[in-house]
Length: 461
Image (tube, rainbow, N blue to C red; front, side, top):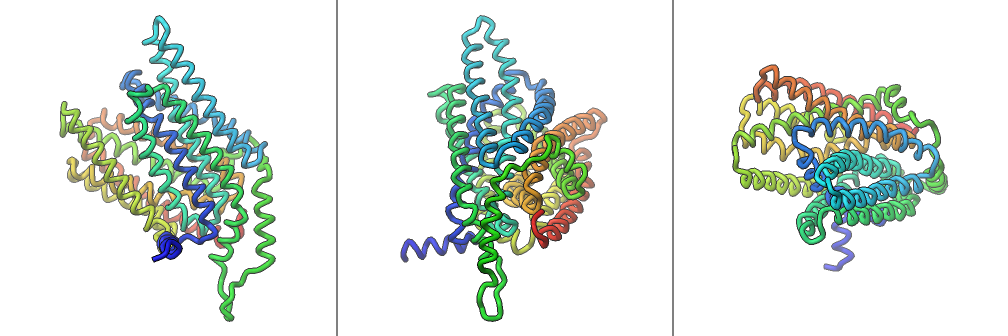
């Protein structure tokens, strides 16, 4: 079998058009580099959290919420005044400059007389910064994807693109585990900065394939006439060229457009509510998992680490297989509604199961299926929702939902879980409180899918 025939079989298995391959490869590399850069920093961030005192983590999460709200207007200011290529480059290089600044700060406090106290405070600031950085760089990536790819392409290709992020996360965390003793934790910040610079360059290269992507989607989705020929032609090609030129115009608008558009649009407000319910449920499950594992293993830290590694390995394997061979097909065959409703449906069943049996195997199975379902189905489906929105909303409203609303859900979930624990609810009672929340989440997901289908049937805004 020739290499060409093998390549064609792979493309058919992944449901990819040949014309989409260059853009898909650069998108894959872009996401790989973004998440590799973050996962190089994540263990350092977690160490800074421990160094600053576990009892202070709730306050660090509150600081993260404030940080996202403060940074969002600066981000939308850039979006309003620069072309797409320039503000994406500026955003990533802003974070690169921050990383270099932290590297200098840590170098200074390590040599100071009162280094332990200074390092704790710089570490707390770094914890907040990394938590904000993660949301922004990933949000910018997916905003770009929803802008570059058309709705039909998003359903087919976002799962494949997400594989790049999964592999990047695995690579980044592995690099830190292997090199931290040799290079030192703080020197790894410079490696993360290099990965971010490569991500910015990948984003720039991706922009060169906009017209090719437009043509691929036009041919792939065009209806076939009675004569067996595609109902396409020159006018569509002209439209593709005009669309590509529009993609590089300055978006314009105001700094607070993201917030105001979310509050005024039922569709965007629904996506915000979807994100809020997702993060609240995720936080509840995180606390439930930690409670059950702490009770099960008591002081056996080796067993806990082994279990965490097993959960991550199972999650990553299931995620990769689903992203590669099922995500695109499931979203195309069963619709965006399936992808959106899958996670709340799993949460409904999982929290009900935990309510009846709050034991280790239930929480482990629930977590693996839920996390894999989020990475492989729910996240791509949520991103597809934005492909039918205006360019301004793809960058401004989406960023507000992805950063501030996400962190708001963390806060609501963590403090409400803690408060209900104070009121005397046990593990079963806490799990069961998420059952009606998950039911509302299912209904909201199906409503958003209907709204998406209506918008997708019309020309983009």
